[in-house]
Length: 339
Image (cartoon, rainbow, N blue to C red; front, side, top):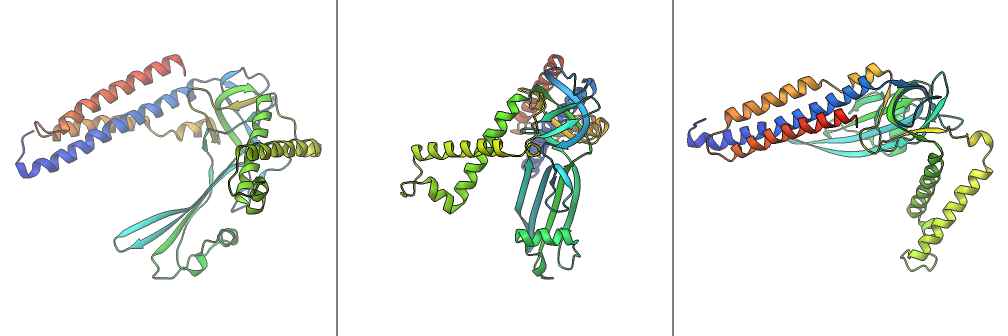
């Protein structure tokens, strides 16, 4: 494409943008398409007879302990929650966004169907819950009591928002609800491993809590030199392990439920999906891969058309073509191998 010199740089930049955007859309579309293939092709297993390896299960989400954890804002019984609060401050024509809270509770829970129960170890999972709260808070916004209480507890100054402050907050709360339908696609493995994983996680969380508490951190630093030496850390780790073990032995039976013999976890390769609702809803959440692939191809074609002859954007053309060919080849191989 021939252009006037004054338009050459602009067209090169625009062409480069489309030549970069196209492969990204194309490869993301292939990724979504492969996931849809996996969800459609995987037969549904039952909890009692699930074979070790990649498996699909459907059932009800149950808490591992005697009671489900309440969601942070609305207090709805849940097995997974995430709260994100952002502050948006307008300064002239610019708006600056600062994330104040991004808090997720990701703990083992149970999937139960009409044949039995399996444990779910959600580490590394892509989790799709339901949205419990999604609101924008600005001056004069009437807040439900639960939201106001949460903001007060977290120190979010929504009560003092001025009309001309240029500040507003967005608040979102997602959850996988207890006793609700759930869809899983992950690796089935012996559940005994999850007991050891749970203890290691408890020990790690306890050590983190000690380091955040000045008094308990001073107890770890036994020689009071301000530096935690290796022998001090080893002693603290041993003490945390002993406490976690003793709490497990002393806990009443209802507080320490037996772990199911099978656990669903993240596979060594592939993705791990936990989705509220049905398989149909899990499929819908993957988006429209055909649209993404088509947009990617169109973007590359437009970038090629706009590329001035002899410009550096021509190199992006070949990079875009190679990226799409490689992505298609890799997606086909992985789908053929079923990984």
